[in-house]
Length: 232
Image (cartoon, rainbow, N blue to C red; front, side, top):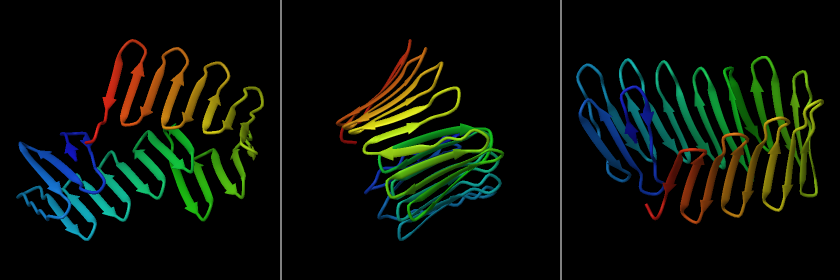
């Protein structure tokens, strides 16, 4: 975990977990197995490890990291950041404008809005709710259905093909093998997954995320960003 004044950055590694905190000029490194506790007068910083649970609390603005099983939660007062990982589902939320990334099975959904979203998982049912308009995603057997308040979106699975149709503009999600394509009329968005490679493209400015082996590459038109992971 790397904390910067104002914003908070967290990096966690499975197995042996490392956390780095910066407040003032103090750095703390934690590794799972050992136990550390730090208290500061005025503002209180506490790191507790009990089983597989970690908690960091600061008076005034509250930071909390909880690890129990496979779930991680990071909260900051005022603007709230929450990262939850349970099973195969990842959710990232930020107060105000909320971002959510859902991964279940081989399907990835990214949603952005200034409203509030709720995700519920019960059995094989996934539900996404947005204030005002309502989005519901249901999985039963081999059929997927997405319904939107006002306009209706339906996603059906027949064989290995997924299709979403909207009146006027057409949205199509096709799955053939391990490839997913999402198209929007006018500007085109494409998400392709095949093997271990993920590519996200946006018309005009091109964004590309490639994962092959242990290499991650993010490319943006003009400037190029590259993240490489090899071993650690």
